[in-house]
Length: 408
Ligand code: PLP
Image (cartoon, rainbow, N blue to C red; front, side, top):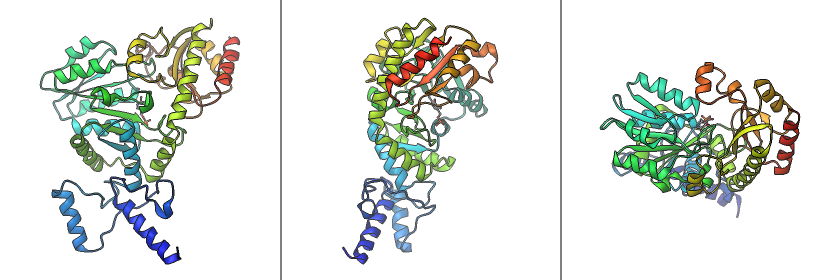
């Protein structure tokens, strides 16, 4: 191919991919590149005023256009990744956000109205709880917090005509509680309430809540989906195209657009999601079984252990139990800190789901600012440790834990 035909091929492929907001053609990348092109453009042009009018007509009255005019409403790189994420979670559509928190806040702010009511389970990510309890209140949206796993309390908390949403995590953080999804969906449908599951800890590899009739799934894509501890991202996947369109418009108003580079890194991470999660499931199971038998460990929470209160539910609705294990060291704050400091492989850092193992003591990290009473009421004792395994060799991780525990 001579240079001018290569150039015209490039222009054709490039415009096809930039115009395809639905991303179906984004794989037709310039020069037949294998990877999703990273498109940086704050605005999108029209060849003529007629071209513009045709677009506006299609967008406004024709059921939606397959391109955008401005970057807050869409981007071809982002759309391509959204399509992949919708497929992974068996959703009708997926919407990307610059963080998991932004996915959650945009969903709730778009769907809820003043005077409505939200039910949420208590074992949720601290910032999600904070947003619901402190921020939604400012908009006259009431929130009822119910104990995780108490389905009677959950049903009783529903206020006829006012409750719009039930939200929960599964597995939860840090005790890895598992929501009985068919039971949750049954309650919600009988009361005509929508459901959202934060499935960050599971990933679409280990569980697909939409298959059980859940309406929306959220992931902090900062974690397993991107998988390399190098970007912040969030995704909302929905079962209903119409509702997703409303939330996509909500994103355009609230302005939570992820940037194209981060979307690309996320798409790169997705290529290895399956094998990373498989390895993390395997290592976490080995670690949980090892810790459970160790005399210097008081208690272990991992849904793959028969001793976990939700093990039976987990085996019915999950294909793997994830890469996070929570446990209590036999001892006090000082003993637990000695254990943490003796470890050589995991980094002491918040987050989870990346290729590097990370470990944290919630009492001195995510719950450090809480009053002691409140922290203990939530189960965040001084000796509680949350370990998120990476993809290092399983035996190396086990040996590292063994040497650190032996020093206590
Ligand atoms: N959901 C869960 C379960 C989380 O653990 C987190 C963060 O740790 C979030 C949501 C928020 O995600 P992000 O940090 O990407 O905003």
